[in-house]
Length: 223
Ligand code: C5J
Image 1 (cartoon, rainbow, N blue to C red):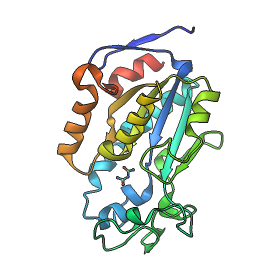
Image 2: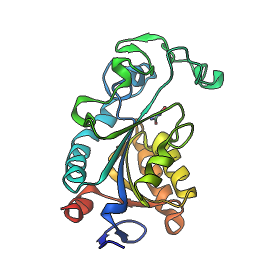
Image 3: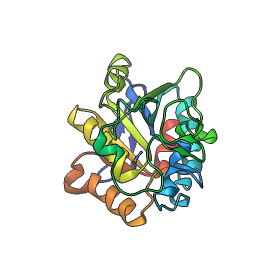
Image 4: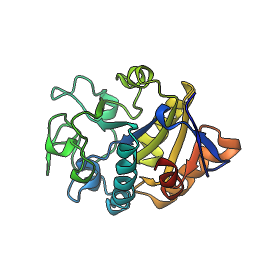
């Protein structure tokens, strides 16, 4: 077993083994974050998500320096939408739907400009990018295999949105036995109330499906 570092977290400090810990960056895509994109057409304030970029850039730089496994995910679909269930396609009443032409190409379609990750957090050539059709990173992807083949047992979970894809992925990972630390200032929601309650839900009841830590408490441990 490698040396572990203790990090302040809720509901209690956690010992992390950095060489068995992956930084997971969920769906930091232009379609969700940029003004004029899909997120905004749903009536959301994208500024709430943009707050995450700067602290996440610092955490990503630290993870890269520490030689940690970095995994980026992107939510999206094949151009023919064959992997998008009708129930997802027709949900709600946005002015644009998945697959429609939006400001940044076809919305949430793989290969389109808007589907890709924002420039500030662009994956390096050797980093893993998981394309997922669902909210959780395990569903219909190789994410589990990637973690297993790299000997990963702990996850730093970051990205957007806190109560949707971050929660779903964290719950899926927790059920599979991973210890998940959700990084409070590196996850974002369009809704401040969901952000607050979403973080509280993770650490409640003795850490019902994870831990919550601030990047300021993680960064010194990653040096
Ligand atoms: C949503 C996500 N909110 N990445 N996607 O539809 O959380």
